[in-house]
Length: 290
Image (cartoon, rainbow, N blue to C red; front, side):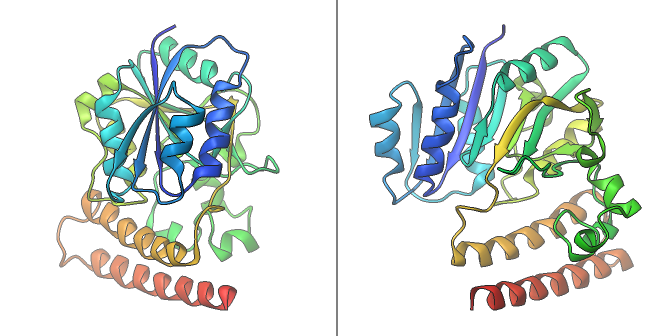
């Protein structure tokens, strides 16, 4: 089996990172891979934990938080594998998920990216293997109120593809979460690494869009199950910044790929809509924390 490099970006997530690395190295599956942890200036003892408990891991220490995209690019640049797995530090790899993903990628020459079925700790699907977003997904997105009230509406079901594919058969999607994204390194060399203008969020959608534009396919392999403790390690301050970054980069994504001129009506609509969405979510966040 081909060489796999796993790149994990960490920022003050020591306990989650420990659990993630334990799930990787605690498997009885004799599967060979290298792991690169890129630490973004953590102050919680994460680097020391990696050095003391996982000496087999290659640790790259940044002096400050360089953002998710840039830190991943540093790890990708250091990777020696034919396949690169971008993996969040707050994930848990179950069973032979790594083997399932690598085997599928190796067996399909036209597939550039593959992911597993990402689930919450209660094993509910997170809906992160998706079709490309449309402006309507601002209202019917993965976490939107309308999707929660009307989970079976056509727009959300078409967008959240992994939630409607309940079998174990692999299926094609448009884009997948950077929390667990395996890509052929040759594909990255063809289309470029993550766009570092996306400090955090939407860098995965942008990468997948560029990969699809080059004719590569993207698949979800449901047999490869990965638990993602999404948002559990986010502080109050970070949560507010996350809301701003998410919506700012949503606009950046639309502006980069779908809006040719800032004077287009849909540009103004996207900008105003996302600004409203940002302030509404910030208000809800304040009420929840208050």
